[in-house]
Length: 343
Image (cartoon, rainbow, N blue to C red; front, side, top):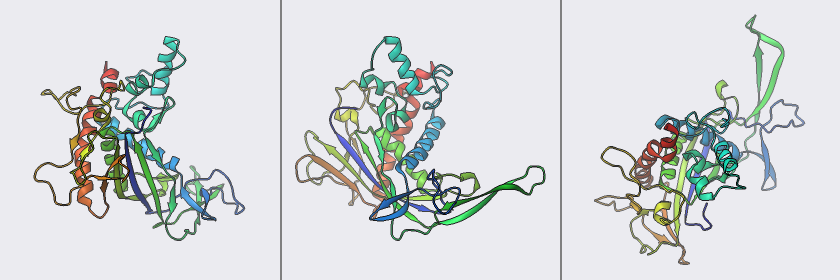
């Protein structure tokens, strides 16, 4: 999306296991354990880690649940083909866009139309037709490499209620209290996308999102700790003065002339989504402004305007979340995909 970089958001994230965790490697090591934990080589040693793909899958699934709770259908189902389901029933954006391309006899659809006609989740996480705005880094162990241990499981005989012969299997699990560190990177974002992330990260902090396999049998319980958040804007005109209070810009504010259909924010008296009412920056603070409010700084090269939300000041992040979360709720209920699917 776009040929230039206009905005970035970097989020530091620690993930702490509150119970045994297993993300399977898909291969067997010399120990003969049936299910082994995924490993990588880092700093010259072999260690367990949480792949970014595993984080993305769990967080995307939770984001889909939130979207479907707020609207019907709320988002597409990536595994539903248009040949069997309608858009109203959640047919995937990928199959819908493919059908649109084939009907027109084109080799490809314009990037602007692909973004416009995608559901909110595909706009943020990507689909077969476009890259996602949100990138996930692998989560690596902080401190000493934990010693994984084996856990035995056995199948239950449905007739006797006892152990089923030959159904014993072993798995490697990461112990509780293991701390992993990772970061999320969001680029060229709309403000409702920050709002959706605020919902998902809160669920992670409250331990509502499990990772890995065996979630129904006591594995995968984790809790996240959100660290520093840094929002950067490139090429703001006019650039904010050093120390100016934070102003949040969505892509509608940064690129008002593009055909991507970026969201504007506002509601009419009937509570419907109001198109093109606020193609401007959204102030983070009202009046009176706090003394420790987030203020603009520069990168020293005249390119980036930077706003830093530190983990040592929870009130800063609370202001950010309370500002962007309602924008996601509004967008989820009244975005074009929801209206198109309902007709």
